[in-house]
Amino acid sequence: MMKNSYMQKKEDIVRNWYVIDAEGENLGRVATKVAHVLRGKHKATYTPHVDCGDFVIVVNASKVNLTGNKLDAKMYYNHSGYTGGLRERTAREMKEKYPVEMVERAVKGMLPKGRLGRQMYKKLFVYEGETHPHMAQKPTEMKLN
Image 1 (cartoon, one colour):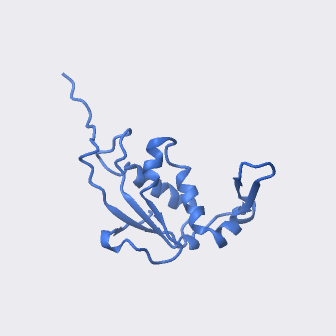
Image 2 (tube, one colour):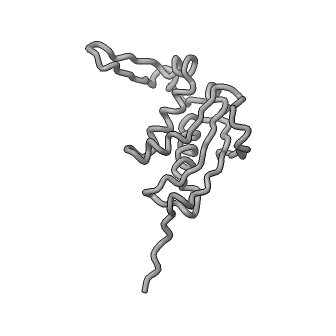
Image 3 (cartoon, helix red, strand yellow):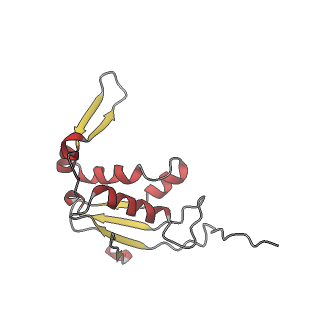
């Protein structure tokens, strides 16, 4: 008889907290690492249909890098739903005014779509500067390499 592979139950999940410093790092590299941890793929107990990921705190979002010509060429679009309600911003504007949203969007695009992805996204906390209010959770530093 074949032994089935391990399936994690949502009651058995142990969640840890991690801090990732985005200073001087490339946006995509940060986002892939964060998405990986939010999904729980770094654990041996990973189960695709269960949200078994950890909490991630990203600090220094305003100091994230974009390579090449992306600061001026990359566009972020929002639509209000009304006629002529399309708002477009360059990556440079986003980085100056809304660095947190820029990182959040990059990560969100890498998470699964649907109910499970939304649940995972709630475990992400992004901050513009060095400080964050989650010291009580005793988060561990995580390197990007």
